[in-house]
Structures are given as C-alpha cells and as structure tokens.
Amino acid sequence: MIKPSIYDESMFFYLLLISTTLLFYAILLLIRYRREIERKSNELAIANEQMQLEISERIRAEERYALAARGANDGLWDWNLKTNKIYFSSRWKSMIGFRDDELGDSINEWFNRVYPDDIQKFKKDITDHLNGRIPHFENEHRLLNKYGDYLWVLSRGLAVKNDEGIYARMAGSLTDITGHKQAEEKLIQNAFYDTLTGLPNRALFIDRLQMSFAHRKRHKDYLFAVLFLDLDRFKNINDSFGHIIGDELLILVGERLKSLVRPDDTIARFGGDEFVMLIEDIKEVGDATQIAERINRELVEPFHLKHHKLYINVTIGITVSNPEYQQPEEILRDADTAMYNAKLRGKACYLIFDKNMHINAMELLELEIDLRHALERKEFLVYYQPIISLESRDIIGFEALVRWNHPKRGILLPMEFIPLAEETGLIVSLSLWIISEACQQILIWQEQFPSDSPLIMSVNVSAKHLAHKDFISQIKNILKETGVDPNHLAFEITENNILENSEYIVSLMSQLRALNIKINIDDFGTGYSSLSYLSQLPIHTLKIDKSFIDRISRNGNDAEIVQSIINMAHNMKINVVAEGVEKAEQMRKLEGLQCQYAQGFFFSYPVNSNEAEKLLANKNIHDNKLITKR
Image (tube, rainbow, N blue to C red; front, side, top):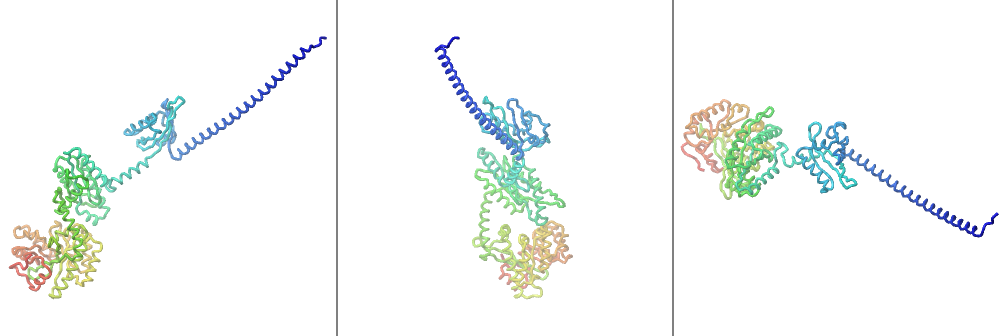
C-alpha cells in the first residue's frame, strides 16, 4: 500500500477550497439571479397591471364614448384611409333611413349623398385636417336620405397616424341638426320677413336699399326707384269684416304685388296696410310710373275671400334715386311724403316726389304742432250757415262749421286742418268741442227767437270720430251737460262714409235716433250707389251735393238726377236740402223741382254768431241780394 504524500494532501485541500469557493460563488450568483428574476417578475407584474389598467380605462373610455354617442343619438364612423373603406354604425345608417344590410362600406356611400352645394367645403375641411391646417375635422352639410329628402347633419372627426407617422384612419360622429337648422331659419325668417305675408320686412328692405345705394356710388348712371304703397280705406274692411278677413286680404295683396316685380326687385311689407317696392336698374322716371300704373290696374280687380268679394285701391308715392340722397331713410321718407300728398289729391293714384312736397311736409309738421295747442288756446271758432226754406225764405236752421283763427296764418277753413286733425287723432277732441258749442248756441237762439218750429242745428261729424268706441257715451254727456233738446240737433254724415262702413254706421245711426238726434246724409249723390239702402236707414234729411247744383241750370241730365232724388225723398218722407246754391237761377230751378230747403252763398256765407243773430232778427232772407259777405 502506497502512503499518500504531503503534496497529494495539499492538492486535495486546494481543490477542495477551490470547489468550495466556486460553489459559494455559484450560490451567490444563484441568489442574485433569483433576486433579479423576482425583480423582473415584479416589474412585469406591475407593467402588466398598468397595461390591464390602461386596457380597462380604454375599454371604459370606448364604452363611455359609445354610450355618449347613443345618448346623443349620434352615428359613428371609422374610415380606413388606406383601403378607402368605412365603417358606419347602425345609428349612422338609420339616420338616413337604412338598415344595417342596406348600406355598403365604400366612402362614396357618404360622399355621393352630400348636397351638391355642400360637397366642396366638406372635402376641403377633411383635407385641411389631414394636412394639419385645422386640429380636428368639423363640417355642417346636407345629406340625402333613403326617401329623397335632405337633412342637415354635423360631422366631427379626428385622424390617427400609424407607426410610420402617416394618417391611417379617421373616425368620428354624425349628428342630426335638422331641427336646429329649422329653428335657426325660423329666427332669420322672423328677423327679416313679415310673419303674415312672408314678404321681406323693413329691416331686410333697408339692407337691400343700402346695397342699391352702394351700387350707385360705384356706377353713377345707375338708377333705382322706391314706391311707397298704402291701401285705401283698409281700416273700413277691418271694421266691417273683421281682422281675420283683413289679414287674408293683405296676404292676397302681397301675392299679387309680388307677381308684379322682377327677380332683382324687392317688395316688402312695413306693417299694417303699407307696402314698399324697390325697383332696381331703371332707365328713367317713366319706368317707375309704368309700374305704378300696372299696380293700380292689377289691384282694381276684385279679391275673392271665402264668401266675400272685396275691392281695394292703392295710393302710391314714388321717389327716384339721385346724388342728394345719402341714406336709405331719406329716400323712404320722401316716397312716404309723396304717397301722403297723393292721398290728399283723392287716393287711388300716384305722385312722384318733388322738393315742394318736403317744404309742405315741414309746414304741415308746424301746423300739427300748432293744432295740438289750438284748443287750449281757444283759437277755434264756430261759424254758422243758414238753411233756408225755399217756400217761405225763413231760416229753419243752421249748419255749424268750424274755423281756426291761426295766430300767424289768419282764418283757416276746415279743408286746411281737418284732414290733419283726423290723421293725428285730434279730431275727437275738436269734434266734441264743436258739438258742445253748437248745442249751447242753439239753446241761446231758441230762447232769443222763440218759434213754433224751433231751429235745427246741424253738425258735421268726422268718420274718425264716429269710429271712436266711446262716441255714443260722449254724445250723451254733451246732451246732459248742455241740456239741449236732441230733437233740435242733427248730425251730418257723408254718403261715402255710410257706404264704406255700412254695418257699423247703420248700428250707430240707430243708436243716435234712439236718442232723438236727427240724421242728415251729406254730399248725397257722390257715392254712385243704389238708392235702395236709404230705406234701411233712419234718415231725416238728404243734402244734395253741390256738384249737381253747379250744373243744374245747364245740364238736363243733372236736373233729372236732382228731380229723381227729390221725388224719391218725398216718397220716403225724407227732407231735401240743396247745398251750394250760389245763383238766383239755381234757386228758381230748385223751386220748380219742388226742393224744400237750400243753403249756399246766394243766401249767406257762413258767419259768426253775432252776424247769425242779425239774420235771425230779420226772420226772412230775400232773393234779391246777398245778406252777408265773406
């Protein structure tokens, strides 16, 4: 047996040491590796947890977006920009009337349905977003549905890039905004169009008139005209037939006027019965007057409304553009002024504005200001014109006629201020004052000149005053305050006023007769109407209009007309007064026709109360001379 050497033992221990060391290091490495694995595992677990959280959050976000889209009733779309295929949600398809299986995935399913006028901007907004010019896509457009109708939609979207930085897809939503658009259009309609007729209103008309002014500044030879139209006696239609019929008539008038203008012209309604026309690009003033004549011809034709056939006329003021006009309001003002002057000339006509009208308008404004203070300043006077019995030449009564003792202009006749009083509404106060003065005066004269046939006081009553809702109660108050016997009071109402307001006037006349006030028909014969209506009215006296008396001695036809009126009145137990007798020949002719009463300059001009008392003191008016002078 060989005994180991010391060297072998040393080697053994050395190898053992190395092995132990290597084992130690191996154990250390194993521990470190295990720790690293644990750390990596922890990091992976954390990363996985974060990823799961992100996935969950994205899922929740997508669910929220889908829920929000459903809540908003929006449709969803997702467009693959590479394949040009697009996904449409069920709601997107149903918005335009399709089921899921009825619409393909081509982008043309969308693009081909966009309204032609909207497609260019629609594509431009998409391109601008893809090119980075706008942060997100948003566009309003009209979209054709399955049934051939267009609805307004709002489309929003956002493009997404791929890993290569190229836009690969674009997704978004589609919202039906038809209701919103309709409400918006309604607001615009209400702001710029008349709600009754659908015509442009004042605001839109002024806007277009401003455009015409701007065009004229660029083209000095450019002419345009403004026509201001007002329907004659429209208020009578409202009063007689009611506002519903009146509104229907306005609609028909608007339609008829609209048919008379060219596409570039404008017809607007300013309210009430006022219409305004803007006639573009005319060559001369005559072009505007031709349109005015055409309007009058068209509107004279009857309007058929349910059970009514109505006739209406229109008065027109015309203004043509010129360098002096700087603002639309100026040319409108002058057209209105021309229309007003046309009405003063008899209505149913037209006038072209001239500068004198503006001067007259300023004078009229001054007169209106003076008129408002005339009553309180006691500037009005009542004059009296006697009514004569042709048989006895006795004065049987007076007609009360108002005069205005203007501090600067002197004595003004009714025709110079009554129309203004009616327009401003001052006629009611003035009329009440005249009636009250006349009642007090007749009481004085009846006491001074007692007679078995007491004097009758006739007073003209304005149509505006008759239409006042408190007219009857006002008259009752005057009767009570003055104590006059209503049997000695007569109200004169013009024939035209009766014809224009027949139903209302008949009712009013009946109420007056119930008060024992007599009713006289003034200006009889000018209404060109059937005489049959007289039998339905409580009339005391007919006053034959002066126009017939002027021609009675030289025109056989007029004499026959007067004779017919007198005979008819006598048969109906109605008195007759001939107005405007100025010559002895006229008086003798009337006597031969057996006319009972007359008044006029031949007998006496209207006089003040003192002069009237002198006439009453004479008791009798002779036919050989004028008793009084103007």
